[in-house]
Image (cartoon, rainbow, N blue to C red; front, side, top):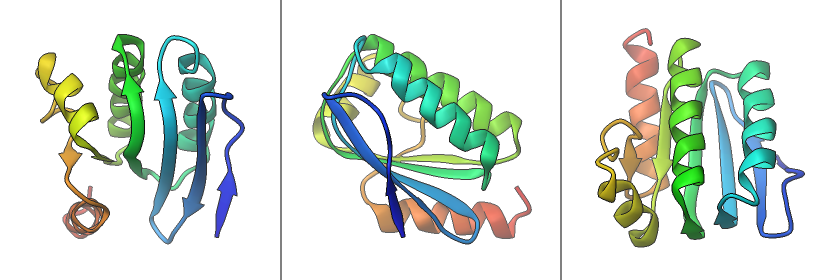
Length: 127
């Protein structure tokens, strides 16, 4: 069951909790305007658990450097908590992330099923 996230006018999303993961589906813009609310809401969700996260950014229209910064912060927070972060991307997000060579660190995935499979693999490996 999905619950709406309280973000900004330009960034909307939902959170779905499954057995061992949280799935966030986001639409709109991750930029300097939406970044503070995005960081605050996701940090709180990470602390509540589960430890594995999937960010579905396939419907994100734009991401800037502040958006990339918050993704790096979230990835580190998830890893510190023993979890994994998978990001479902689209061509626009992928291009922006590749410009700063963070595609491996941010674990970009082409679709949700690949991201789910990676979390199952990490979970069975004891991560």
